[in-house]
Length: 220
Picture 1 (cartoon, rainbow, N blue to C red):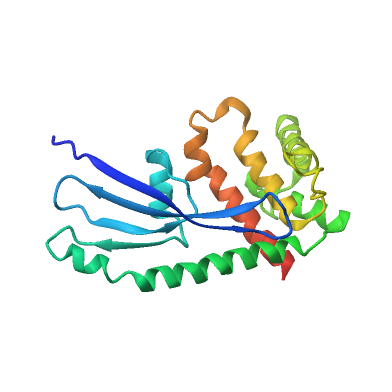
Picture 2: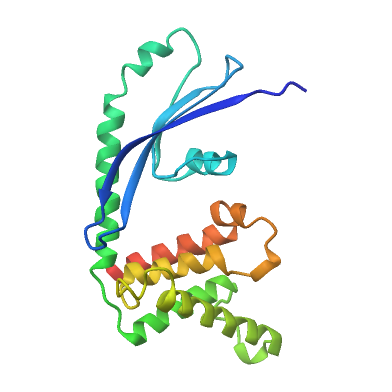
């Protein structure tokens, strides 16, 4: 088989502070990818993913919300590249919308009961528990695993990086980030052979996406 060499370049495009967190900046990068085969489409656009390897490149190319345009790798390519002004304006709006969405989470403080309910729903998602399941019918090992997950998530929410310094323990933005930190650093311990893949594409990403969608419902 013929091996096709792929290439990419990434540039800093924009950076915006989220406002409510003095050191939390949301960055955008300009990504350009191509292959040395004369056939693979050239892709150009903006992404919040800092591409450093094939896994992060795959994430950037497939991540919902990224505005990446495809251009046929032919003689008309240079003319198409001159017509990307709309891409930048569309991306600037999407970037601003993303900052607004994050700000909506940061405006919400959860009471303890609501916070516990949120964590319980994440635990249920992580263990694939549905309303029809009877916890009393589960094995002691399963119950301990569920309890350990709840304890780990609450630890990252209350004690994760920056959570106490920035007083994010009850803030919906901080609570979501605590869950995301748990999926990246602690979920399933050492049983995940490729944690990078799990975080970007696997079950870890599914749980993080669920946690974000659930957080947006709390934000209204």
